[in-house]
Image (cartoon, rainbow, N blue to C red; front, side):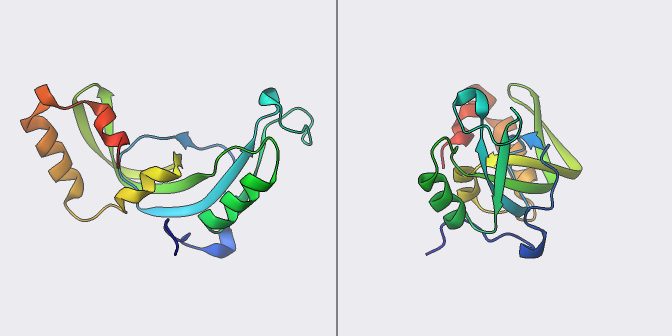
Length: 142
């Protein structure tokens, strides 16, 4: 069974820029690809003239199998597209942002599912009503 979403367009896997935002936003719209990074400074094989490098995959399962089979490979990450997301410029202050943002996420964050209509508004309203008892780290737990 596929635990994580399929990529939106398998023909584009490996075509996205290496540079992306990191984490954040709390909501995603689409998974673009799954990536397995190799960090030379952490002991990965140096096959890119000292630069870090990654391999892109169309499914989490492929990325995970590859990661487990290669020394120095990191855990798979998801490259996601956000069309709307939540910015938290300071703890407990949430801003609904619209536009396009590409980011790499921990794959377990995908378990919350893709953004649904009204989800961001509900998220912000719930946090605003109970800010004293909420911590931003609560969102890291599925």
